[in-house]
Length: 154
Image 1 (cartoon, rainbow, N blue to C red):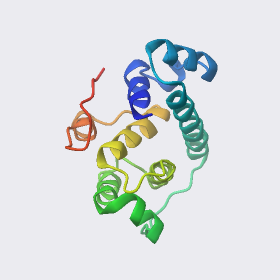
Image 2 (cartoon, one colour):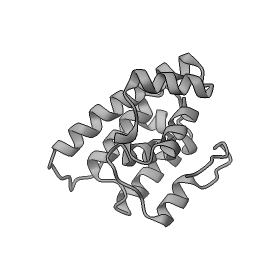
Image 3 (cartoon, rainbow, N blue to C red):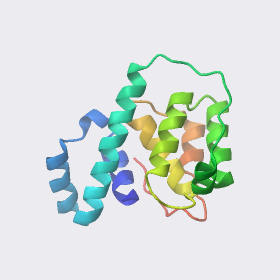
Image 4 (cartoon, rainbow, N blue to C red):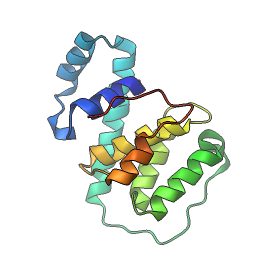
């Protein structure tokens, strides 16, 4: 599924440039992606878009501290939680975007979520909202980790 998500990020510079789900599924199939992975990626993206739309409609701001429940700590791991906190303190993620990242990471049902996959989730959350991280943060998000597969960039 993550290969599809990265492919979409690299192929469609803006989320509104993506075709409708049915046409996108045909294009992804023609490129050679597996139907099961395509379906899983489309569901994941649909849920992301629903959450991103709700985030953009909200004007709420948070000044509190985020505490992670045991289920979240187990699923994310300390490395991913630390990275999320770093992105929020660097003002790359707003508190609402942080919550979307956490929810999308938990939706993977993968314990723990690798830092490489978390970085892709962050990029896709920003991409879905039409936001691009600055060059230094982009390098950090797409930088190489031992658990991350090599990626092609725009």
